[in-house]
Length: 114
Length: 110
Image (cartoon, rainbow over all chains, first blue to last red; front, side, top):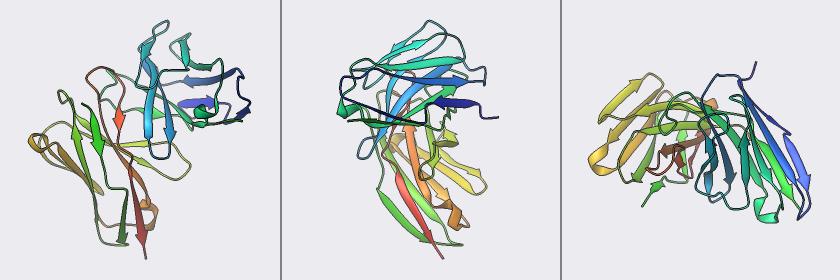
C-alpha cells in the first residue's frame, strides 16, 4: 500500500479556475510538503506543514494556498489558476525536522491550466 | 544565497561507473541528500550525508567536502536500469523543505 497518495493524478482546468490537489500520507509523519517540478527549474518548495493546522511558506508560494486538516491530509489550493501554474506537483512527507530527513514522495499530479 | 548546481547530463557504459557531481552554497550546512528520479515517476531517496568523506552504501556511494561545498554520488557496476535523473538537495536555512538541483540525467548504454 502506497504511503503517500495524491489525487487527482491528472487535472485540466481553465484560466481563473479553482483547483484543489489532495495528498494523504499513512507514514504517521509530522512534516508534509508541496513541490512543483518544471523543466529548467527543478523541484521547488511551495508550502509545507509540521502538523495539523500548521502552514509554512516555501520558496514559490505566490498564487497558492494550502491547508493541513489532519496529520494525514494536506491540500494545495489554486483559487485563480493561471497558465504559469501548469506543472507537475509532488507531495512529500518526512518524520523529523524535514530539512534533512528522508522525504517520501507521492506519485505526482500533472496540472494543465489552459 | 542558496544554490545547488549539477551537470545536466552524463553518459556511461553498463558495468562501469558514473560519478554525479554537485556543488552547493548555503548559509549554514545541515546535510545533503541524493534522490533518484526515473522518467515520469516521483523522486526516491538514496542517501544523506553530513560528514566529510566517502560513505559507501554498496551500489551507491556518496562523498562530501563541506569546505569546498561539493558532493558526488558514485554509481558502480552500472546497469541499464540505473538510467535516471539524480537530484542533489540541501535544506535552506529559512525553511524546512529542500532546495533541489536541476538533476543530472544519467544514461547507461550497453
